[in-house]
Image 1: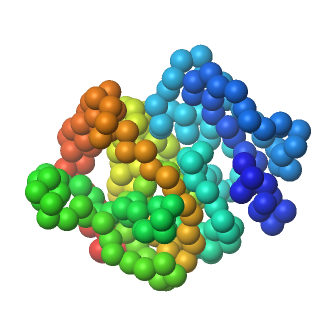
Image 2: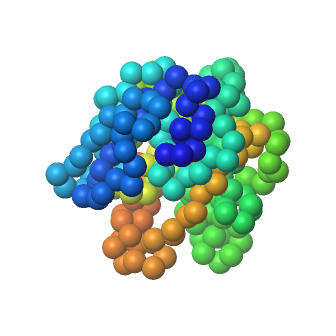
Amino acid sequence: MADLAAIAGSLNFELILTKNIPEQWTFLMEELPYPVKIIENATPRGFGANHNAAFQLAGGKWFCVLNPDIRMPTNPFPLLLEALTGPSACVVAPAILAPTGQIEDSVRRFPTPLSLFMKTWGKGDGRYLFSVNDAPFSVDWVGGMFMLFGAENYRRVGGFDEGFFLYYEDVDICVRLQKFGGRVIACPQAQVIHDARRSSRSDFRYLRWHIASLVRYLVKHWLRLPKTDKL
């Protein structure tokens, strides 16, 4: 909240907060310098369902999917919005940095059975190699912790597929956007910080969701992935 408050003066935006489980706010709404809408779920919903519900309340030209554990030491939005003006650009993401400053693996090539097999044996995880401050470039998919969409593009593909519960929604929507001829853009010139929890590595419930989503993704898209290098 503090990071958004710090950049509020340079942007005209609204904030839509989703309470997926009961919790107490650590801030006062009246202290925030921008309009806030709140969604309180009676029962927990998946990642895609929550963001689709938020989109129904959004009124802007752009729609940003943003995890609450993202920190923004500097304002990334001017550079991201500039990248979205490129030909056929549908969604853009900044470079995601760990608290230590290392670039996280949030910009990757589409998973395939072969690439997943290679990853299991430590032969690469499909990430794109880049440096901070590199020029924006087209990629297969970007992680869902921070995605800035053109609102019309999000609407055009029907938002996230709610059949996924917590994983692979971001991969799936990037596939669908590119099947419509759009481009997914990584913008390393903009950077944010993310403290990833990696819950699927320590909690069986998350691991089960992860595997179920992977199977759904492969059934839905394998052998029908767009040729992003042709876009």
